[in-house]
Length: 257
Image (cartoon, rainbow, N blue to C red):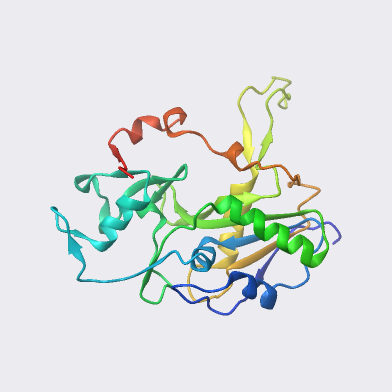
């Protein structure tokens, strides 16, 4: 039906660490984009494009505490991280990076061919550059680009997707000042549009050998997405000290970087 919203997975070749060209993959894999599309890109392929890859050395232990290579990378990459005695199960470290509560500072080694893949740098700025490139390539004005990653929610099993950077859309829908069904004025509620859509996109991408790190959302503009040329990525984040869960961050250690 006309106006239906749909998520379209896009199959690509494997991007190869330690560095590969994302723009060549986009040129080779994307169908023609349309006005009002939203493109979701897995953070891993952006990181590989930026060369954010470290060869795994299982024998690389060092420092006064005999830390592993991965432990040193986590402490280097995270803004806040758990002390070793607060480490959770299976050698996962609770950490905060770029206003996101994430395990191991987002460092991943799945589908990485013997490398640690770090989080990409400046994800929203990279999304903006990709958006400009694709707008020019396809001669369209309304386009948004969202960089996604997998995430674990406290007290829930399994992962789901979130945005770690984006460009071209308003991330929130604000209900404040509007009436509920009984006429009471809503005081606090804002709906996080960008992360809800990212969660569905990551589900469509898959986590295994699907090779679909790109997903196009089509038909959402009228219902959910407000396009903009302004930089809006700061609207969706809260400083750790002001967050509802701020008491949980107290045991975390701030990075010395």
